[in-house]
Amino acid sequence: MTATATEHRPGLPGGKYLAIAHIAARQAVEDRAAMVGRVLFQGLILLIFSRLWTVVIADGSLGSHSMRELLWYLAITEWVVLSPPLIHLEIEEDFRSGDVAYRLPRPVSYLGSRIAEGFGTMAVRGSALAVSGFVWASLLSGGLPPDPRGLVLVLPLGILAASLAVVCIAGVGLTALWLQDASPAYWIWQKANFLLGGLMIPLEFYPAWLASIAGKLPFAAMVHGPGHMAFGFAPDRALATAGALLAWGAVITLAVAATSRAGLRRLDVNGG
Image: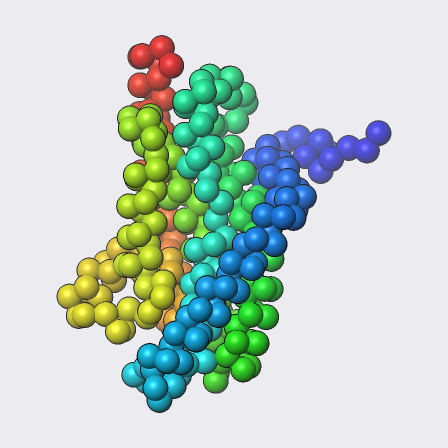
């Protein structure tokens, strides 16, 4: 019988969560139909906007940015947004069906296990979408960005951003404890992420008041931060974005953990 890595090292910190993430990743790999659908959806979005911008932007540029840069920007932001799985639906279903009662006695945190599953799925989705996004953007824009060195910085920033999104979506799922249906909370979070993160258009082209508000929220670091690397090699900006993602990650993780504890206490008081 072959032993797993965690069996060889039973004291490995986080080994149980790594095992959960590994299982989720394997399941995501096996779900090939869904993966193909996401890759095609990603390509469709990029195709639509490449044609739209060709018509709307007559001279092939928007401000100081070329059409090619804008398409690469969208490819990066779409990659970040599409990589995290919708684990709020699974959390909501756990509360609705009562399955959470069977998960709580396990020797792992309920919230931690769900987030670990999200990370495992995200790793597979993100890898596939990173490759397909690179191919789609190259084909539709006619090549690499004018300064392709910025793409080197995209990968670490995108992983940090998508990881933070997984934690945020888990927090959205916890609202089902009070609302019964987490969908309205998810819609609000999603639309705020799209608008205030600058999913389609860089924040530089927003009205000054809206760009100022967006800059003070985590969405800008999560979406616009990685996307901005399409405009050139900017290590100082990348470092600032990474710092913002880590800082927001600490704050949001603590908030989600506190929400989980409050919700589980509510379950105990109300009997599930």
